[in-house]
Length: 273
Image (cartoon, rainbow, N blue to C red; front, side, top):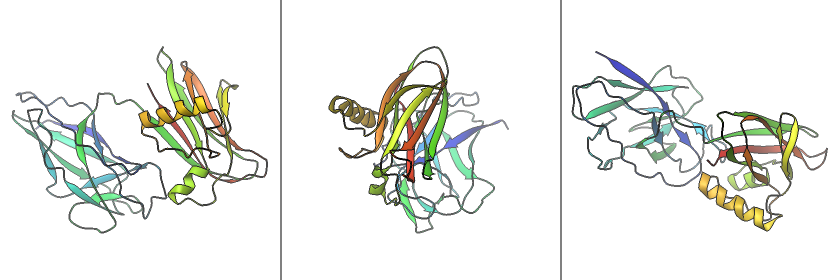
């Protein structure tokens, strides 16, 4: 018996309904050669370990919970509803045994359960519910966004860095969300975050109040829609920039508008292309 193991990525962010996407593989007599597999779902609310809006990596399982992957392009007709419970694993894997041809079945499992993480348990649990569907993404799957929520002390800063590889520029949306978090139930937000982008220690772009320039605000709104980011309120003191970055090392720094400012802030990076 030959088996292949695939990493399982499931994220929950925002409140939009998950779409239905087909996942199909051709039938043959050789072991299946899968692309990376993404299970994408949406929480209907927040409870337990989820605090307001954000991204939460989750794992899920259920005895007998599997999908037969059709050899046609027909969409999956029976997405399975899962119920979230606050148990589960910090990691999960999809194991695909060798098939002699025909349809393939994926059985979802997780191991090493630990307290404090969310898992989806089919048929029990009462905290959250949502629907997961099967989708195929190219291998290797590119990084499309990352976020980090921080609490700034007076006079402090939040810093995140990343490396742009390859040999072509990338267009990036970067946001410092403070007041906008209040919409999602976060208290004690940083009232007026200022965002500055550095390359090799040199400032390349900054913003204080994302909608102060109407032309730039329009571009930022379109970029948020394109990337799936939640909308910012016009006139809010959240900050955001769109920057085209060449390969290299970059740092995003958030500070308050004055030395006495403090509170929670979300630093987001979305790769637009």
